[in-house]
Amino acid sequence: MSEVLVCLKDIHFAYNRELVLEDIDLHIERGSYLGLLGPNGSGKSTLLKIILGLIKPQKGEVELFGQPQNKFKDHFKIGYVPQKATQIQSQFPISVEEVISLTAVSKKAAHQALTKVGMYSHRTRLITELSGGEQQRVFIAKALAASPEILLLDEPTVGIDNESQKDFYSLLRELNKEGLTIVIVSHDTEDIIKEVSRVVCVNRRLVCHVSPKEFIEGHFQDELYGDDRKKIIHHHSHA
Amino acid sequence: MSCTATIGKKLFIITVMLDIFNYSFMVRAFAAGLVIGTIAPLIGTFLVARRFSLIADTLGHVSLAGIALGLLLHVNPIITAMMASILIALVVDKIRQNKIVSGESALAMLLSGGLALAIVLVGLARGFNVDLFSYLFGSITTIRSEDLMIILPVGIAVAITILVFYKQLLYISFDEDGARVSGVNVNALNMMLMILTAITVSLSIRIIGSLLIGALLVIPVTSASQISRNFKQSIILSIIFSLVSVTIGLFISFYANLPAGGTVVLISLVIFIFSYLFRILKLA
Image (tube, rainbow over the protein chains, first blue to last red):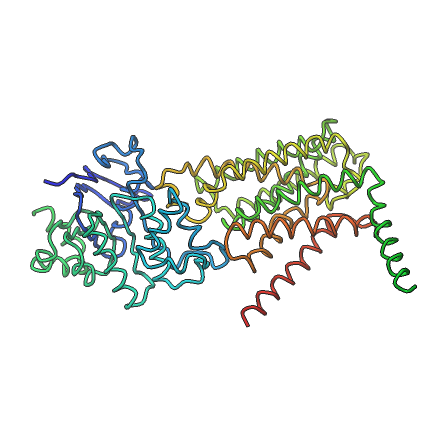
């Protein structure tokens, strides 16, 4: 069995008393390429934020690289790519090179990361001048510049054209082959299941943690995106 | 002959212009102006990047209450202005963190509250034996040596602190969540930025005035962002624009006998128009 990088035990989380996540148990192993799927409002981005330590669950434990989250100090091991393309201020005067320098330990590491994602020639441009797909590549380079062991991406392809999405997934595939553990949050099930090695479905509870083949054969997609949310939870509780 | 006359005329103008420095109050005004003209856009760059520009105006109004309190208690008004604005800056930071009310509403309330408190304090003292107008709109004649003894070292300390924490401040301004994931102490840095803003605003009140200080933190930064190609360049350009505004503004204030705050801010607006036109022409 591979080393467990992220371990969630009995996670419960509520926003203003409304339960968003309950009874979540999840292990993410080194080298895996995991798609975290679920409909809008299912709690998948909340779960990602809990792993990242951006929000604290009301109940449950989070372990990162075998350590309780509050004692974990090797932050460089975790790379994060936010859903940024539509959120960057149009007047923020920051160059691509400056974005990478936020995490890079050296200029060499910054240039290597930019070369890896094919953005080295864009290094002196303003980030606001780039397309959505190019901006996401820069965010991946920013994460890679710190040499992470796990990369977590929150809806990274939102607002990006189809061609750029293909290039983006191709890059992630290559990084995973090189040994990087990847967790990608998405509601775009069709594209994701072609890419990942494991599928985790969340709809307040953990609906499934299966291979893409099992996901398709088990008709989880119909259940996950059907209107009957209770049916999904019912299915899980009897699984 | 005409060439000699031209040189003579130029020398005469330069002599008249330099004559300004024969007045010790103008030397003090320029010394304070150079410090403020440097730290205001330095702080302002991060505030504008974080869409938090209104904090400067709010703290400017709160500083006025601090000034009134200082005059009432016969304490150096810069010190009481600094204490009042630091206190309110920490309150704003807490409100922002806890999301008690929206950040914008909180700033609007505190802005009005600060001005209201200042008016009440003035009323309590039945008016002061100083020109309150100078604190509202800035004055070149009011800077005393003891003020300079506060403005110079504190201003330099503010600039050094910003330079030391430059990378972390840039990180939290650009991507706060990303900074948290990378282990940056975002809450502590936010608090530090608030305190530095409060200090900068209270130091600037003598020259620029409480009603116009927000402009010096924002306009040069906005002008610089029109033409800069990276964040570092944006900071350097905003400082240059700010120093040019302060220098020309003080000259005009002296020779035309006008409030310094108004002249400085108007010059910075002219620079903004030029930088905006430059950008438009470049894009065309």
